[in-house]
Image (cartoon, rainbow, N blue to C red):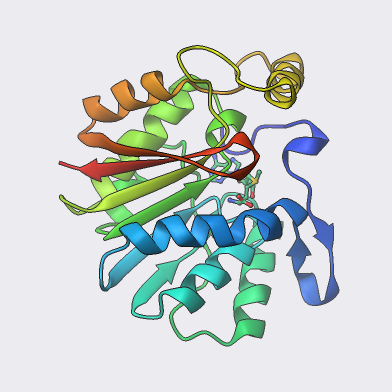
Length: 217
Ligand SMILES: C[S@@+](CC[C@H](N)C(=O)[O-])C[C@H]1O[C@@H](n2cnc3c(N)ncnc32)[C@H](O)[C@@H]1O
């Protein structure tokens, strides 16, 4: 399924000048995400951001890690136009044009890789478990052995939703589409391990989110 419908609060982005979209949540979590990605990124190489959204994150990442060449991507053409508009305004030589990638489709990993780093934020709760499986196995194919994938977002822990806000958000997602909603950390770790992505760290992030660090074995 290329682009699932999600409830409004799951993907808020306002129009600004020149086709650029602005997501308040992306602005809020950028510095925390940057800190984790910077700590786990290789010294140089090629990085893929899956589901780049507005493009705010990839611009921040590319500025902070100039020795890495960044490939942003998204399934939605409006988001890709926004990513390109943000990257053009930032005039960064290490950000490529946004690629049209449906991360839940089969085949992109072998075609677009190899990458030395993959970053994914705020998508796993918006897709089904089967789609998350495909996303993980394609990412594993795209990633060079020994290299990391950083996954940021909201998760269940030991099957539980750990705040009232998370319980409400997960319920809204499932009411909108019973196939989507928060994934459990252990479930993602086990499915990732089955496609050679080993969970090496779980980092607490602001707003009760997590970063999962997976290493391609
Ligand atoms: C909640 S936004 C997150 C954007 C950004 N990563 C962030 O954290 O601000 C979800 C993004 O995933 C994209 N998306 C949804 N389904 C996708 C898919 N199957 N493959 C790639 N991107 C997808 C949407 O177009 C949207 O830009």
